[in-house]
Amino acid sequence: MKKFSIRVHTGVWATLSVLAAAHGVSRCYLFNYMLWLDEQGDFFGVKL
Image (cartoon, rainbow, N blue to C red; front, side, top):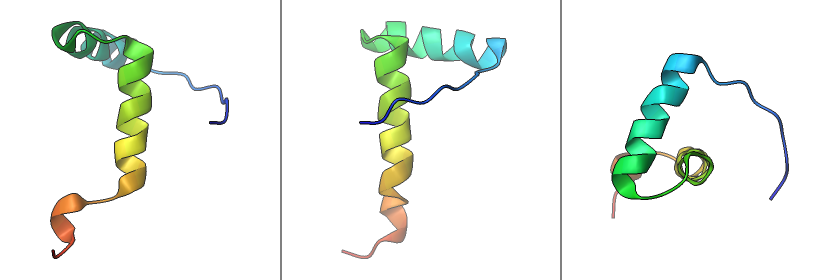
């Protein structure tokens, strides 16, 4: 894992807060998970 700084708009951070609370995880964990999902690429575009 590599540390980097990022600035998130207030509205996006508020939405992330609601989603994180609904799933019982921290905002940082959810943000990191979303970055990981983005890195994995489009699952539905891959033929199994």
